[in-house]
Length: 275
Image 1 (cartoon, one colour):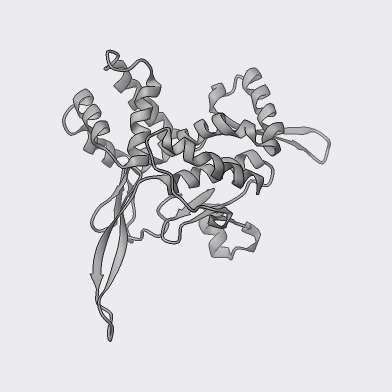
Image 2 (cartoon, rainbow, N blue to C red):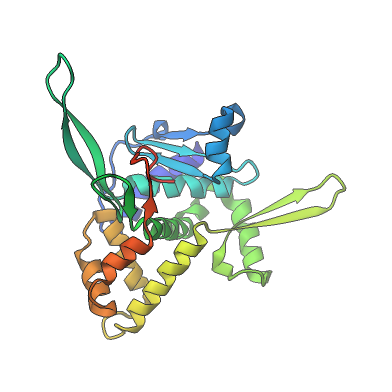
């Protein structure tokens, strides 16, 4: 509860720093912690088998989070990731449907979530990979800015900083959390968690590098390029990002990026849009 309260208190400032408008009225009731042991076999396969850590259910405005029982820091990061999906730009299309014996009803279906754009049949979700990469990068920045203010995370954050200073396994900034476990034979097992969506974030990193190096007369750092991408996710305003990509990488490059990072959904179901 302490972690959730702190996340909700800090999120409006964070979202507004990227030009977004924070969702009002969020409370701890929007968060649902999944106990995997109580899931059906099908549920366990869908969640655990797919490696799902969380879900933003836009239809019911729920944030479903699978906790890491060994790391409150990892659990907090998952909470922030899903909250940022909720804070992202969201638009709908309205379809009239006929109901026997009743007046026509309107079915709302998402058209865009963050950078993600659905096709008319809801079988393709363009930019999904790059959208997840941006959300995870935003999560890392939220962590760096606010998690040190949460007392219950202090020990894990200190342990992470120790590992970042000493390990040669990963780039220090790729380490999201560290878990120390005492084994039955009294040996220690150290588990290092990297930030998620590794391949998608590498693609985002490459994109930002290319955009920055080709426009050093405009940008003083790669972070300024990231700001433009993050603003597109949180505000829905794609024009600045699209113009930057098209002018730097050539005509059609924005469309190609969307196709190269799309998610296929042959059933056309949008109920589990953000994992």
